[in-house]
Length: 227
Length: 227
DNA sequence: CGCGACCTTGAACGTGTTCAATCCGTGTGG
DNA sequence: CCACACGGATTGAACACGTTCAAGGTCGCG
Image 1 (tube, rainbow over the protein chains, first blue to last red):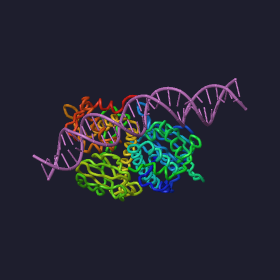
Image 2: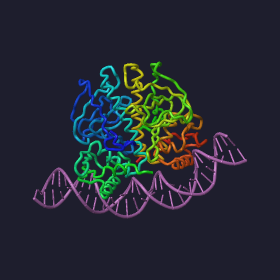
Image 3: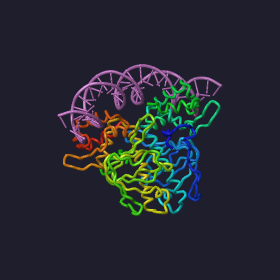
Image 4: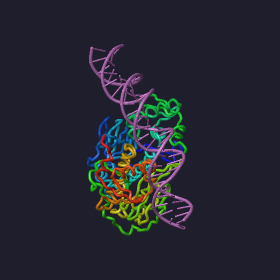
């Protein structure tokens, strides 16, 4: 999942996790637990399986020779990841929050004879991925720091938040540096902007990894300053 | 095509246009001319066709409500684009340089019964697209202006350049502002950096849309300053 | 020849980074 | 149970990179 704010974003409900309910061909699905910190795969590995996150959270990232890191995406429940490029994984994948995944053999994506329904499902998931990545390009290319962070929190709240009387409770299972590397910023800027949002009454920092979104509308407005 | 520099970039040859030769099921392919400036589709349109650029160049872009634009990709010969997200196109697509495209009905991507070979071909193309976009995230998130521009020119030279005695001749069929919106920079920065590269003897500006890469190795080195 | 669109160049400004110090929370050992 | 230590988060101040705004310059086309 590319935690991004679609341009046509108007209400929380519009960020539906459109994960289709159909998960057919049970014989080709294998469920498996994933432990905190575990690496599911590395960039360059032969891609044997495609993963679907059921519970927990994973991180997709790439590191340059120079050591600079880019977090490509966070994988939340419902997200499908590990699509092969030329038969190989194209990113590293680590577990941020323990949970469970379902794995499908890559050949399902290649051949459509074995399990046509599942094949379709994975192709659709790949298309969604493409769309999500295109959204994220807007964030990386054309938004300022506060907009990026507001967009990030806004989507996270809509997708994974739990409503409560004062607003929406959101768990951040990643470090500040992960958010920074996802949004193309420094971790200091993430901290500073969080503080600012707290001072402005938009969010509350309950712990470093648990926030309360008090004013979702304000967050959404901040995610693209009119210009 | 996402004009990006893979991390494992070591030689020009490594940026192969891996466009498979197989373009089967001729009955489902329709060839068509595209004129300069023509819009092939807009964001939100019902996706009827998937396009493969044969000759010419197209531009995929998105515009925010605020008017900020992000060029998602440039489509060069061999690139497949127009993958639907939820049945709709997710970007605008305009022609930068007249040429020809092949179109495939989207249902080929949906159903794999009609034309299994072609279906596979398109799925592969989509996976390549995913990989290319991930590469571009590195550029947008973690490279400085000169690195972005060097990476851009480096890939362009490798993919579309024509060798000549003094180096590699590269045509830039887009405006400075397109390059800027693709790389998340301003057009002034593109200009300034081009000038700098010329002063350093790395490139030559023959016309504004035709450059000569004199020192491809230097360009490649500049695309990721060791750090 | 002249207009308009695009490109280039310059100077001032602003945003986000960098570097460094401090704070906080959690887990560990005394 | 408390002191300490460690990793991560926060805060501050100086700096740098790229943007913005504005003024020419150049190219292509009528």
